[in-house]
Image 1 (cartoon, rainbow, N blue to C red):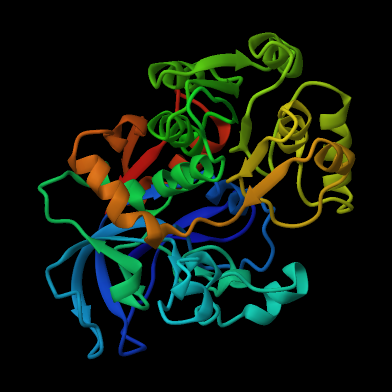
Image 2: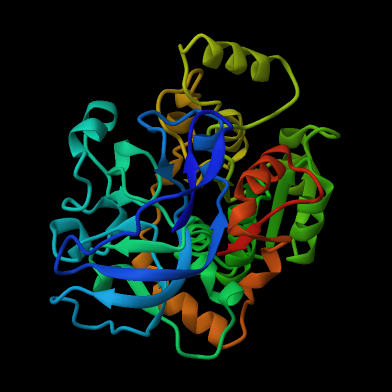
Length: 388
């Protein structure tokens, strides 16, 4: 079969690789019908995530048709059309029973690697380094799906792939980020980053009752899409973000702030170059520019929610602001399976059509070009969907 494989920093190749086989009685094999390039894939593409190996198959946003099942798969059948959650979760461990699926204790065979970096291991993740299990990803013609009963949602409503594909990651990720803000009627929410996750965070904040959402980015097409979703916008290259947020909130600050950027943030000014230098000499792994701003801007007693991916160590964390302002910080890889049915219902009921975020469509064989396009933010690219 053909698959998009990592061969080094900014080196993607679509190669012939062996088709996956059932390895466990709870596995299924899915024939991929649609897959996507995620913003967090760019952290791999740009070399910021360790333990990648040449030939690793990329991708954690995908869906398709089940073509084979293990003998202990009970709720899925050959021919079922399914969306696959990006975290791999057993459904039976301490954390899965609490619906904290991205913290599954049984799905990462390389947990010892993650424990050295994080203290404890998260769940396994498709196509996202050997730190999270070394699982083959979904930018391929076929994928092995462990714990298929838990990790998939069946789609039966005549919806298009593009309407449901993002249940795999970015829709639940944006929704969980907004849910973590404990939004109350009348709240103002600020969102740093208007990429795909930021776009879903904006719309989710409104669905959960926010009165006003302020979206922060620098790319006109992203700011335009945010305004289409009802947000006010700030171009951080043209205006001071903190001062503008204070003006918009009467000096109080947003009730909650979401960092939908993560470890590759950009921002004008000397602190950005400080972070770039520290990254270059390997004394800091992540650029937490958006996170710092969110902490400083959030009102006292507010919440900072972090769906943006961070992989290691950051510098100049304003911990004094966190403590003295009595901020709550909520983070985490998304517990995707928890949101499958509630968000599918919102789609079926017409509350949201997730296809709004798609700007580019390609074939799998064009994946290297797609990564370069997305990475450079060219041609108004916000979200790429690929078909085998």
